[in-house]
Length: 150
Image (cartoon, rainbow, N blue to C red; front, side, top):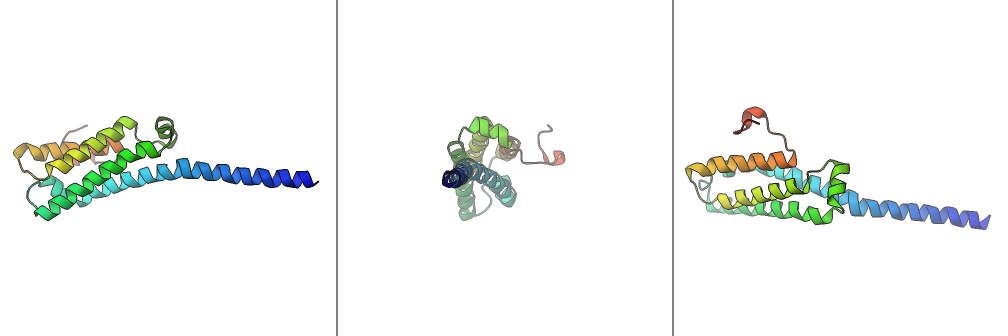
């Protein structure tokens, strides 16, 4: 009878430990990635006035927005390394593909760099970058708000 109790306790402890490993190594990184995607969506809306009007706001606002977009790009790329076996995990949790994450990250950097100058084409390029980010990360944009009709 003593060995049965010991095996039951050991099995319970091992199950708990295995569960914690899955939570810490898989579930939490996936949730952090989703949180970052939400922050990107929020930033694109909150800072749309700066993104759509490069060179117009004050230098302080432009610099702050540029740094924020660059930070979000960095966080997005870091999730590729935090989420184990990203390709398989992405399929299980319906996450963007590695290529989509990298494309969104690249577009965020492009937005970050394009805020300081104002040219005729930069408005269209920024709108295209925002659409690319949203499409890559499955962030919804209504059809009537798109510059390129998909």
